[in-house]
Image (tube, rainbow, N blue to C red; front, top):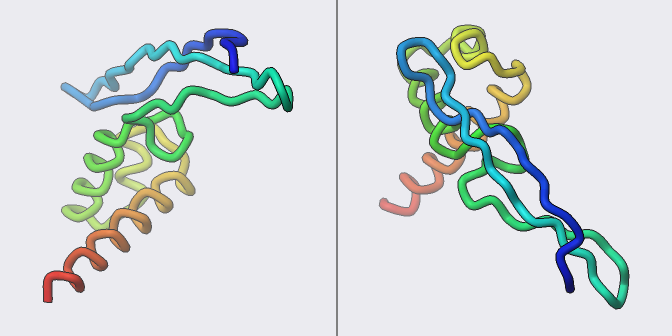
Length: 103
């Protein structure tokens, strides 16, 4: 493996005073010298290869827990409805599994 290039990505991080904060992340792209496939460096705090952080995903889930309206979360965080739905479904399922294990 050797470094093929670098790439920057802006990740939505948190909302403070109704303004979205962004993280500018630079990550490496590798190329395998044997099979010539491209690989990207893993961004630890990135939520499932989207342009948001895990922290923001938890904020979205917590806000949804209070309002129970995906539309409100979608507008506040300026994200697509399907992404909001995926975050809520995934984190809700994880929470239910965690609660089931504790019994």
